[in-house]
Length: 394
Ligand SMILES: *Cc1c(COP(=O)(O)O)cnc(C)c1O
Image (cartoon, rainbow, N blue to C red; front, side, top):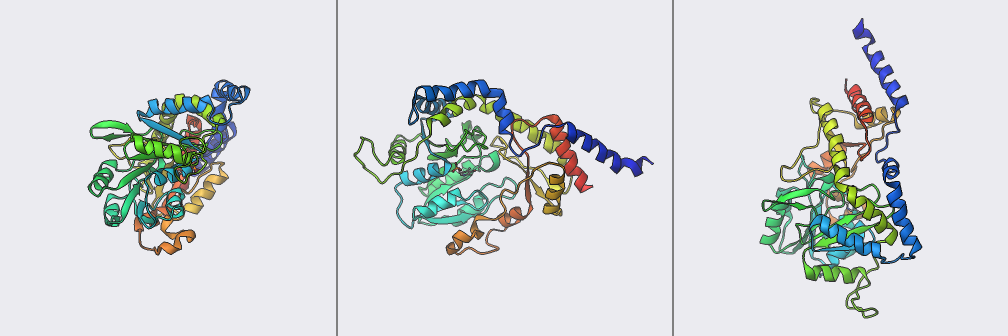
């Protein structure tokens, strides 16, 4: 009897839960803002009162605050994460045709800036467990023309920096870390924990609102311990000048807006707490899903913390679209990061890659799904989400 009614009971209880619950979003910036509203509002108001819109004191403050937080010598704020990558690559003084290696399974920005600068993008496959650049594939991609590697710390966990730095140092290759998804993550490098973005020659990040450290518009930064590279990046970001109206390099115009710096000065104080909330939500998901043989929960690189920019499952023998539709009907958003490997993107056909070149990424693009992940998920929401996923599997 109970057997017969069980599906119905589950259905009713899930439905009741849904009615009482706060709306589930992939990222809930609104609830987060409500908790820090007074501080953010007054920080923004200060910028407006002082009409310090461009390179105001909050930008300088944020630069120092972030340098202190990361334990890095130089932070160079800029307009967004893609600019950060472009400026960092420009600072290395590479020539047309020099090769730059990056990961196949990521957002387009890394590949895009390599191509825009007339450099040759070279793609490497990823590790099936951590989703970060595969050291084996990276080794195969290195040639005498390789001048830089851009590892991406995907979804909040650092790439295998020990191995990457060893390869890079051996061949005199620069390393530009893309830590847009891993601000606050640490990696044990040479026996000591170092923040993502401070291990390679340069680190690049984005303050896009949904990132772990996000502002309320666009923003980005470059970090480095190298004084010369810091000077170059600062100059390039400012039209290639050090002295006003004397231009030493071809540069760009890329600034962190003072209002965004004002938001970041507040949010940086909460970054560790925010990352901890994400880790707690991830632990909840892990516990609920790890016994299922159809769901592969995110694995951890033992040298890196994972700060869960995304919580991404790999599905085994499950119809992904059907699961997504099922969740959608329950008011639960889910996203596919990323549906197409970089080597198969239309815009980059000229690179000459084809289907089958990077099988791990190709398989991941077909089988990953990311669940809601942010700082404001409560137990009720997490229970509802996990039950709804498991209900689909049963
Ligand atoms: C968001 C992101 C970027 C680009 O940042 P923007 O600020 O949007 O330019 C670059 N790389 C990765 C891995 C990202 O997630």
